[in-house]
Length: 173
Ligand SMILES: [Zn+2]
Image (cartoon, rainbow, N blue to C red; front, side, top):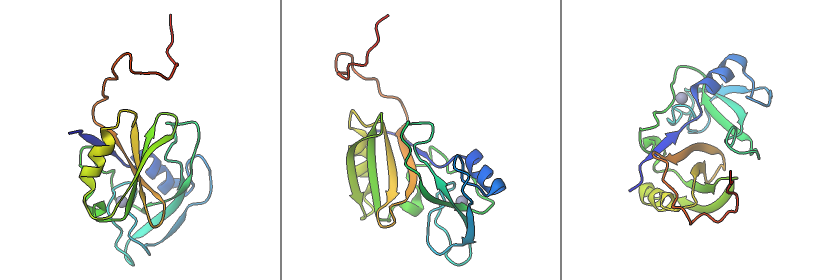
């Protein structure tokens, strides 16, 4: 059983967008509107109340500071007054029953597995992916909209058995 961390967009990024109404790293104007879809908010990972919540749409690269190759796309956050989902909060309740795509990546943004879940049975699939030795992190996306929702990583860095790494990248001093 792998324990995992749920990584929402960070509070500093969200607050910068709220303050500047610009996409971080891109500078594109952010767009504020009344929610027309459930989202979720990428900061608190709660579903929007359609027609009542106000949200900000902006361009975001979920690989920022992790990989060299970016993959920017649209995301939403509440316009104000919400906080980052706790890393140890388990899978967000508002997201469990959604049609989700789980993209499991090895370092270097190499996609090693991809699963579609829609029946709420997310934990078993997450565990299966996290058991994969070459899986470093998982991106959760909305299957219908395609947008990035949040990331998942193992709580503890698993130790890689010596002699089983064959990427040729070892350094010798
Ligand atoms: Zn929120």
